[in-house]
Length: 203
Ligand SMILES: Nc1ccn([C@H]2C[C@H](O)[C@@H](COP(=O)(O)O)O2)c(=O)n1
Ligand SMILES: [Zn+2]
Image 1 (cartoon, rainbow, N blue to C red):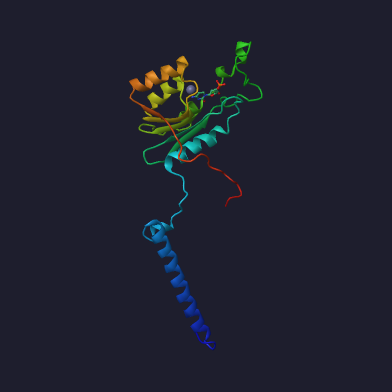
Image 2 (image 1 turned 180 degrees about the vertical axis):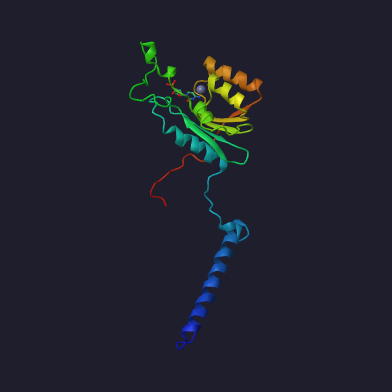
């Protein structure tokens, strides 16, 4: 390189340098992962579909005001589109400040189970008349018998869940019985990663 090179020469040189650095970077990626240069440019740490949908169910559960069990549900169609989402809560206009979140209260009218709409039921109701035939339900808790009736009647084909903590209870055994009869598959979901951190400053 001559010290007396013109502005034009310098920019040509810079272009060449940039080109050669790009080629070098691509070559390194090819050597390290065996992919073609184009493919190797994608983000390596993206969410797979199942983790993504279950994470949506978990995020939705965070909206629930139930002090014992927050449940979230997310319904997805065959094209991987989220068609509905829901969490457990009281019906519209039934205020959380008026209705009880208590359980096994001595006053039978003060038990949350009389009033709560379950996450799966809310998701189905939130689907806004979209057909749910052939869809998959991601839920953080295995569906109870009442939600299972809705699942079957709405045409949901597959259920993935995280917790099955009430499996021994009659309601949940009845669920399995109905799901089996209706040939709806259900399985425990094992996420591929332990946690997903959402940081609002992370953009
Ligand atoms: N599959 C389910 C099961 C239960 N829920 C709701 C109903 C209650 O709000 C809560 C369970 O409370 P716990 O008996 O654990 O005190 O979860 C639901 O949304 N979906
Ligand atoms: Zn239920």
